[in-house]
Length: 307
Ligand code: ADP
Ligand code: MG
Image (tube, rainbow, N blue to C red; front, side, top):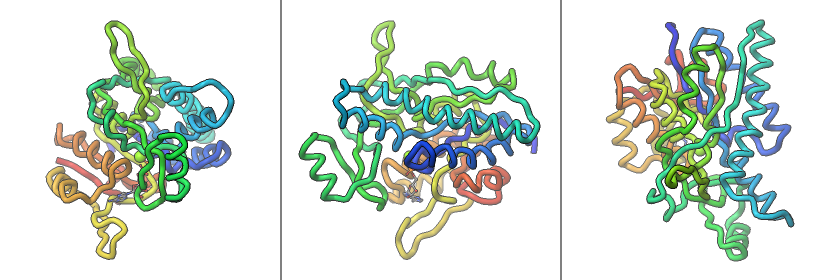
């Protein structure tokens, strides 16, 4: 295949719950990504941080330490996940005899203070709880909990849309220099423009929209969203469940209107994939699992969305 510019977004929920789990999973995740690099593609890596940012926040909230706001926790999660990723990708490249610099960037994303998301939290973060546990914590803390795609209850926070990746301009020259860039972790740290200054805001961007913003800014050929499922389904978890292969933007819009995708999990992925693919017929959006990334890019599996 000719050289493509590929934005790969790794799901935070597939990265495990502890540092050792994450390190081991990321070592595996690096392999399909390095396959793409080895094939000569330009690869930009981004990742989710829902579970990780939630756990970091919870660690501070349940300690005697001073308050640690969400944007700072987001920055920590970019360092925590970026560190594992850059180490794993570098080691995997070296193991194959390829030398390329790999770097993670602390990245901010501009959001709008009038974004309706601030009035309607939808983004699940941190651990999963039973309904009883969630109700108890909600009563004690005022946090909002929601059921997350049949997997249990989780705290939800506002998830505004990123409008621009502040550090976006630095990426193309790095790519040209052969650097593998990890950035916009957790969709970027949400910041508001206040006059000449950027100010962090309490929210967690969905990495699917961060990846879209990034792929748009870089005019990528592929937006690849890697998650826990091999494909997107309609009638998900129902007896008439059907896994989708190749779809047009219009077909996907139809399924979306019919309500097949859960808010906070599959919906943002599908929305991001539609928005990416509908701008240009050269573009392909792909949703698949980590294990299937290589085959997915070749068009052999996953759910592919094109104009
Ligand atoms: P990530 O961390 O990769 O963003 P999410 O949990 O946000 O992962 O989203 C992926 C999850 O979405 C899947 O693991 C699945 O449980 C859920 N999901 C909800 N609706 C669908 C659907 N229609 N098809 C497939 N998966 C779905
Ligand atoms: Mg998600």
